[in-house]
Image 1 (cartoon, rainbow, N blue to C red):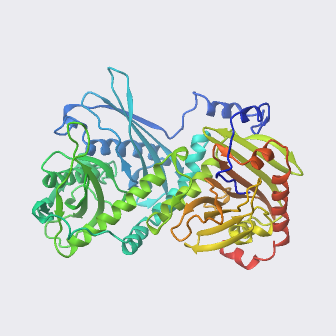
Image 2: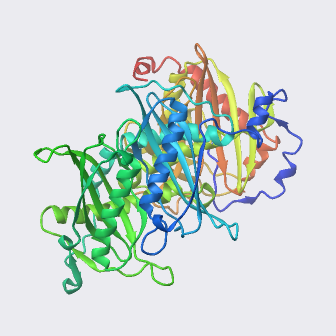
Image 3: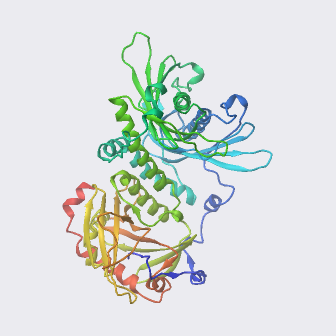
Length: 595
């Protein structure tokens, strides 16, 4: 059941007529509230909108909205949305990477929309969209998107949050993917530490022209801010947005000292608030340029807090890394001077900045790239391991959350659904199996056993066990459609256990490339963009097994033949999967206790 793309492709124009007049998966007896959820009258109960006119007092020296001011508005809007859901005060716990696509000029309007994507035990993810609007031309531009995590507090204790109830397809998608993003955040610090320790960094420090270098110490900035009541929320805690604004200010000064110009902030890397600060605290903000590349520079910022001048111990509140560029008259990034790091910690920061740049670019590309624009096989290496795993599982969850699947056919208690969208043709098979859900998940997690039931897999070799949840396999399938060569695949398999009641076990599959397993003349390299299994517990020893596959515009003839009902090959394979699960349902019983 691995849908392939390769040299034997067939354009699928005209397939629209194949699926016309099929039975929709949606029930005809939908409630009025469901209909309202798809219509214009529905509005998410946690949604908060803020519109601000950009005045001269909000701008920087170029007459553009200060990013610090924008961060304050973003944080306030997101906090209001979080508190609307929690019903009590909330504080900012973290902010994911932010990439700023456009600047905002004085006189324009900033429109910010925030809503809770998902609530966990005491924390929740809030999605934020920022757009600028020109009132004269009525044009609008996307400025940035952000994801913030807030924690609910009541009387100095955490709150057990009620779950969110997604209703639209977009809400269901965000709700499902939020669990994967949370998993990524929880391991973020350790992941960065491991990657920096293991990543091979190209060090060109010795080859640079020392006569045009700027000593890093010349860019160092230290500033102290006194937290006053206007800087705090209704609990007396400093607004996260206010701290971010102060951080942006000192980072901009440090960047300006390197380039001797007015820099533009392009990205803020994910950071966490390590602890709160209150009214009366003194916040010490330190910034320095860690490294300068050809057209960009990384500035590191650290925030520490203390109460009294006599205190020797300072609390670490936050650290962040911000990327700046200098734009010329043509709005293109300009060449920057090289930086000369100080010996010791300065050289460490210099090299870590090079590693972070690679990690940042990989993460930005993989996480933010639209599915239709992403190449099928992305190179795998330790620096993008976490991002590729996240993308793999998220792509499958987004496919599962689609609500316009159409029932194409049904045979022997196996249902086949199809979905036509943009450039993709997807299919989904579903059946009920009398096997424990966790056991079905374990049995199909190991792709090496796939040839036992799938005749399209001739052999499967485990190439690398990345970690407990991710593995890379080399899959060989027999020749099809008269092709003299068999196909091979390099597959990243990512498995996930449910993080909440009612959620499925997931096995996500996608193609990657490995330098150790390049294309061979012996095989024709195939690729899969998004496929995998979901397992829902339907009762004691009863599991709903669903297989999903998203194909590119070119699909093999046998896929088209199966989807149009001219062949029973899909059903035969899926029934063989059922028999495999039934025959081996007692094999892994001791392992179930770990799930």
